[in-house]
Image (spheres, rainbow, N blue to C red):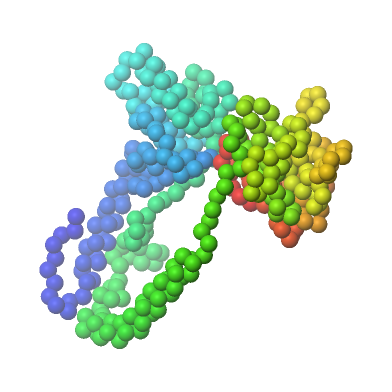
Length: 381
């Protein structure tokens, strides 16, 4: 807490700045030493991994921005693992940190229970770990990539009070510290009128914008399907009049359906299949399961029927430009690849790629890259 200092009118703030900087420097030094001794990150620090974000101070865990319940001991275990990512945290270390007063039998039972709860919360498993790997008879290791975020309080510089290279620990006199208060008031009066005009102009612009928005037609929604199940994709046909979607109803396989934009239900276009795109205004592209062992084949057929033909036996996902150029995602033992046009690799990654789309003009492609194997989190590329 800063000491009370009395100033006479017109005296600058140099001494106050000096005292503040010294106290802030001592505060940061104490905090850093505490962090080294106790292994606790600086306040406000957040760790992000996969689709999760964990506040290491409050224990608040979020998945895709939605808060997930995380109990005390599972949180403390997770924090211990995140403090040393990629390194083994032994069971003995966890016992000394969290259950020092418990007997060995009680510790074993409570650690196993807390670890199971942590894995359930993360959607992880000991057999196929995405986040926490069990090292037999030794401990645990956090194996997913993490990103640490330092959150700063609004208006406060994280490095306030820290001297830059060539400066002493006490800052020089601040710019406004030596500026007479009377001159500051005159300067303020000089600019208040233009500032007021700008503020009024901004207010009028906001009012006009809101009035324009209120005159626009409101967005409306219409439900097109009513059966029990799930839909895995939907596309407007090239003319924009109909919708083709993939859906599996009542626990059955995924089939293709066609419906008008103002209709409900729809008619089935094919057997087990999922939508891929439109090679032309007269054709629809889709994936079907075929062969032994079964695998997905990319096929296309005309709207008015006719025999489907195979487009690709390697594609994992696909889309077409308006002029019919095919873009596909392929995969081998080590890499996923974006090919556009098919056969020409433009991007490779050891992370899983999906949800491929070609821009309307055909000059760009977009897709989702998943850096953590088995997780649904990713980044749009």
